[in-house]
Length: 232
Image (cartoon, rainbow, N blue to C red; front, side, top):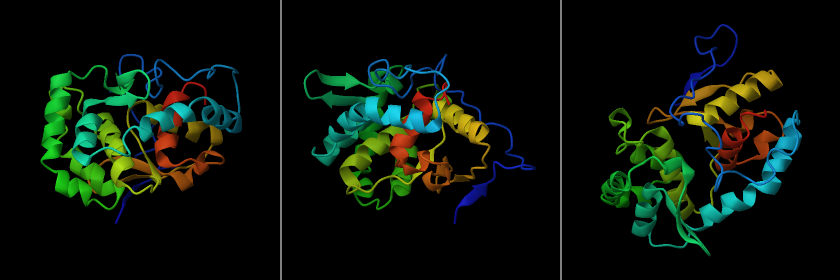
């Protein structure tokens, strides 16, 4: 069963989540190559307008990254996903901004540790189980950058290869995503329950977000909340 945590009145979890860990300024953490084009086109935009803008300006970049993992050998996918690199069809290997601060050797060692778990990874039939496997090799207390964000990103990239096209139905709450989550709760005046999965990672179900955000799969909603957190 899920461990439920209410965001509602009278709950010990009523205070906004803490977004520490996303970097010094938390800006643009889910953007590709320093940001999505045109994302500052209008201030005070509605949630509907922001969702449309994200779809128009960011979705192509999101798909470009995801598609680079789908057809590769599983072991190559695991190593590439852990490293933070992805293969641009023209520019070659590029490191995602989320992992810029992680030393390459540290990420490579984590990738090799995950390769040792390849059988479990290949047989993880839900994203939750896959994330739990990846989280076993993260090292958040050692200031390596291998924390919750790295674990989620790595698992999400691997899921593009192993998930059979099944969308993630929850948004995991870490770093800049937390700022966006708190902003949606305030702006829409809604209560969105938070949960912990089998590995202790915090998340909210996509279906519990207000329209039109509840139409996004988890991987896109996570990116939307982080990228647009200062405009919600």
